[in-house]
Every structure is written in structure tokens, then in C-alpha cells.
Length: 90
Image 1 (tube, rainbow, N blue to C red):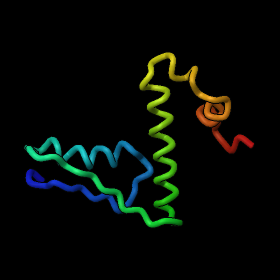
Image 2: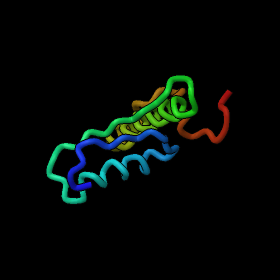
Image 3: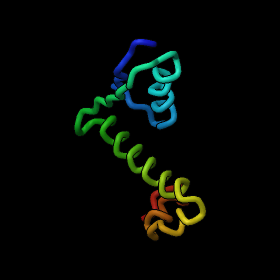
């Protein structure tokens, strides 16, 4: 791992933190080079759906947590409902 310059994720996890931790390991273990993380996703598969969910989750997380208290104020009504609902908000 100390000589790795690429990390490839090909079996997506539902938990974004697990994937981030795997990428970060290459940076922590004596790595001196830039490490590029690649995600292999086949369109129309469960991994594609996971990728969409994780992308939405990360964007929402950045909006809410990245801006402090003002973050929640910038959410649309729909995003706020998605944030606090436990089931299908139809």
C-alpha cells in the first residue's frame, strides 16, 4: 500500500464512510505520492443506484454540515422532507 497510486472501488458500499476509509488508508500508510480513487459502476445495476444515493447523501451532508447553522436554512422544502422522513414521503 505504501507504493499504491490508485485505489479502485468496484463493489460499492451503502455506507459512504466505509468507502472513504478504504481510500484514506492508502494516504495514511506511509504514502508519499498522490493517490487517485476510481469507482467502477455499471449503468442500470444496484451499484448504479447506490452511487446515486451516495452522491445525493454527500451533497446533502455538505449542505447541512458544511455551512454550519445556515446549511439547513438553504434546504428546499422537498430536501427537508427527505432529510427527516422515515418512509416514502408520497
